[in-house]
Image 1 (spheres, rainbow, N blue to C red):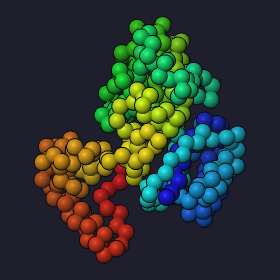
Image 2 (image 1 turned 60 degrees about the vertical axis):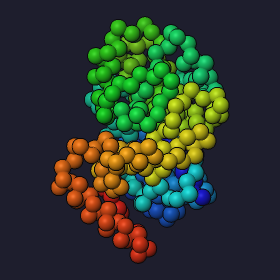
Image 3 (image 1 turned 180 degrees about the horizontal axis):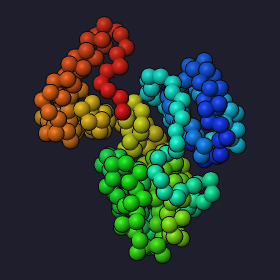
Length: 303
């Protein structure tokens, strides 16, 4: 069993390129796999490996980044959900675009997972899913609003077009691990929204701490690794990724006559050309041949 750690921290980094050069050999020597994003505003990532080495890797990230502490969320996976270890430099650790949003300066108010159910049950609270539309389709909280965008960078325009009249209302947001809500609530506060709240630690922390018999969560939470989606207790659920469109595929989707493994799913079967489908079939064939020979093949394209 492998340990998976999702983490982030908004904290000023003076020299991300220098930090990257120091981190890469340390993380790779530990054998951890995953992705770490560095920017002047902070660090964000998910890594996996043997429990002891994951903790050493997180400690190294804190040390080299000069962080007081990372926001850490843990889960488990029977298989390593990543192929390699990447440390990337970014303009933002979560991209919201060229709008005022600085969690190092201002954010919304945090709501602890244990208080979330009662808070969002208040009829005066407007609940907004800050994730992308394809994540919303997998699952969300009861009565949450889907802003219907394909990218988080579209969120500010949606807020400006749809929520301008609600600046005096209580607005609660949530996202996978909490990081997008840091940016979302910072942006909203700077736009003049006074009563903005967000789920501390995100959906992952909620699913870790709140038992299934008390949940207001519907379905599984999409995660950006090989597990695809997790449920209460952060246990992996029966989801896969369509290698035609890179969207999550449920067990029901795989039973559809429109599903062709490694080729297409009900969401993209009608939009892919025959040339694209043929290319996907050939790639899937090579993947299956490599698997039969016991070799690691990168398989269908990665997102």
